[in-house]
Length: 211
Image 1 (cartoon, one colour):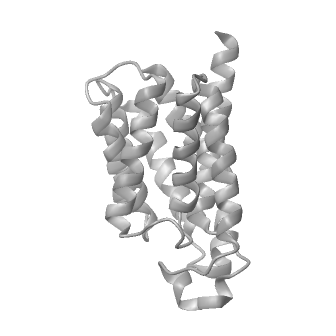
Image 2: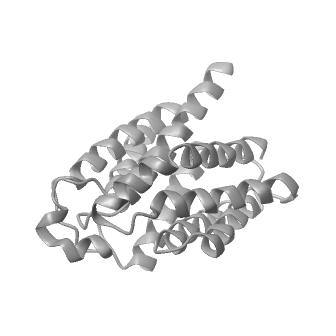
Image 3: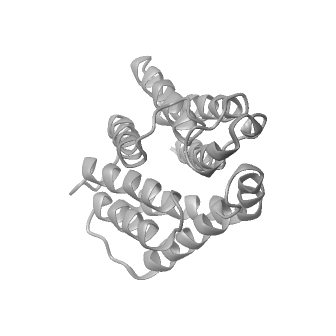
């Protein structure tokens, strides 16, 4: 439970620290507000975490999802908020998170994003980072790797997915209006997804080393 709250704080830190970078990336083909919006949402999450007393992991994630939906503008709020809400459903009433549950949470989050955004991989969205990450995570699980090792594989796959978004034309969101001019630019949502996975991976590695 404490680890999950720490994980949310780590997510808030990485998004807020990269606010300008995310906004700069979004400025190239989007509304130039992804970093600003996401940082505002996670600042609100951090404020709520300081006083909230959630009963279980599901309650923590539900609080995060609801806060992002109510504070993050544009498409990112509903998409990330839905992702956290769906992940919350997997661990409702639970105090401990294991690798299998982490994989199920990622799958549920991706499912929520796909339904909410009516999107699929290959449209230059956060799914281009998250779906390869999930597949790599599950591959690690099947190979008997630890949570941190699975997270490392997922993050590497997300980074490759992020690079892939530079090579395709956007067909979703404001970037789709640019057509071929969106080529060569990475997607801001895929970037924030990669950053969050990378931050969680560093946390998992540190905790694994501490034993």
